[in-house]
Each structure stands twice: as structure tokens, then as C-alpha cells.
Length: 369
Figure 1: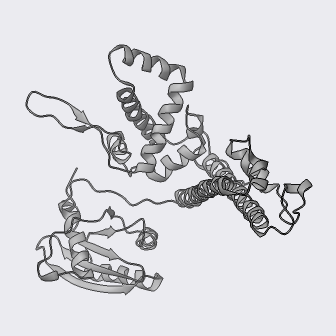
Figure 2 (figure 1 turned 180 degrees about the horizontal axis):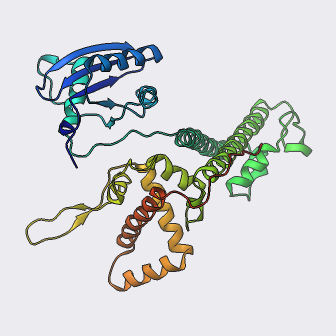
Figure 3 (figure 1 turned 120 degrees about the vertical axis):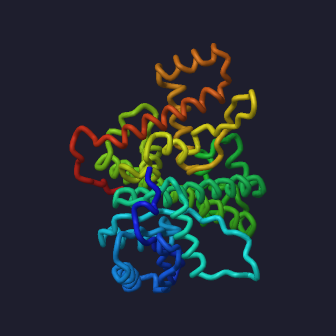
């Protein structure tokens, strides 16, 4: 693959922040900074950056630090303006600063030089469907985390509740049963027939009220997560329904894979996609020893999705179970076998995603909750 310096005449490095973006125009041939500018992080500022690029003309590339965060709106604007070369940068390696030298202009210049030094360039994530799935996954993950925390609180409250209240939950261990009983409590009634509370006991009345409220919060959060999952399934069915036909790939795992993959060509091959998911083994050989070590880098959400798919296939897919037994007979451990499976799954998913679906996409329809 050609170096970036062989393709363009200038590189525009952008250091992105919440309120402002700072850009530095770096000349490829001479290595000098032609111009530096700071603009507001709004459509007017993005237009100013495009005008800056036009003033310097020639073939150019944009190196944006934080294209998935503070720089996401600028990235969309540049794609809309038909800027052909836009590069996604993770946080560049920051060398020790002498005398406390630090500024947005220095960081913007460093982003441009970092892009020139790289042999493999990453494209920013794009696409309306990908953005929708990313937002839905974030909201669903937050709802599930909050519901889990609330359920822990519910168990702790039951443990320390007065006997008149705790007796209602005795014999029920499952979380769903505890939530159902707590949601059915009537905090307004404190007679013995209702909830076993003594009339006028402030601790019992308060405990009933809190348990009822926490249980209602858990049910609301679970309903929210279920709604997000239905919408996620609808988006995938309209965009890439072929993924849902693969064994072990449900709507959540498919959504995570799609948000990491984004669009054709973003990952140059299945090896790059496996490295992105942290399932490509890293060489750790020395001398006569040839070995590989576990990759703990990459997108951990994608790694988790690949792991879930592998576990599901080992349980329910006959082909995968036969493969597992064969490798186990060769002396491989279960962890080693699962690592191999995750690498194979990454290859299969990448090839599937790079191939357009055989049937046309269906219109997006979302059922009301």
C-alpha cells in the first residue's frame, strides 16, 4: 500500500474539542506548516476549514483526531463536501514535552505528521444505519447497567428490611420473582392482611415505598432495553438481514459487528478486522520458540460479540461442535479452541459484510412498543 506522502501534497491535521477545532496545514514535500487556524465546532467553522483547504489547493488529506467523538460532525461535513481522503486517528503518541510545551496547534501539527508516518490508514466510521445502531446500543447498554444496579439495590434492601416486609420475599431467590413481588407491594396499606406491616411504623412504610419504587424502576428500564432491542432488530433487518441468518448471530451481536465494521473497505482485509476485534493472535516468538500470545487490544465490544457467537456455536451448531471435539483430541485446550473459533468467525463475518446482500433491503418499519 502506498504511503500517504505519495498520494497527496498537503495533510490537514485537526485537533478536535467540544467548542473549537484547530487545524494545521502541513506541506508534504517540505515538511513545514503552511497555516494554522482555530474555528468554532459548528457548521460555520466546518465551512471555514473547507475554505482553508481550498486556499492551499492540490491533493489533500484530512487527519482527524477523535473522528468518532468531538470530530464526528466535522467528519460528516467533510464527507458531504466530497473530501476524498479523510483519515481516522486514534490518540497520537504524545512525547515528553520540554518546558511544558502544549497547545492545540502543536497537537494538530502532530496529527498531520502522525498520519504521514503511518503505513496503514484507517477510514472514519460513516453511515446513517451505523449511527442509528450505535445510539441504540449505547442507550440499551445504559438501561441494562442501570437495571442491574437497581436489582442489586433491591436485594440489599430486602436483606435489611423489617421482618414484616422481608417475610414476603422469603423462599424466592430469582431476581424476576423478587422484582414482581416488590412491584406488587401497596405502600398505602399497612394493615397486617396486606403486607404484614404495623400501622404507624415509619420504617416499614418507608421500606415498602422504596421497594415498590425500585422495582418499578427495574421494570421500566427492562422495558426500555426491550424496546431498543426491537428497534435494533428492525434496523438490521432493513440494512443487513443476511447477518441474522448466520448461526449464533442475534440482533445485539450483529449490531455490534456492524457498528465496528461501518462500511465496505474500512478494514482492508479479514486480518485487519480480526485485529480490530482483538482476536488476531500476536506473534511472541524468540529464537527456536514459536508461539503467539493473546491479543488484549482492539474494540472490546466487538471482541465480546465474537466471543458470544463462538460460545453459542459451540453449544448449538453441529459443525462447530465437531470442530471443537477434533481440536480437543489434538490436545488443544478449550480456551485455545475458542480463540481459533473467534478468528475464524471474524474472517467469516468480514467476508459476509464485504459482499452485498443477495436480496434487496426492505424498508425500515418499527413496531410501536
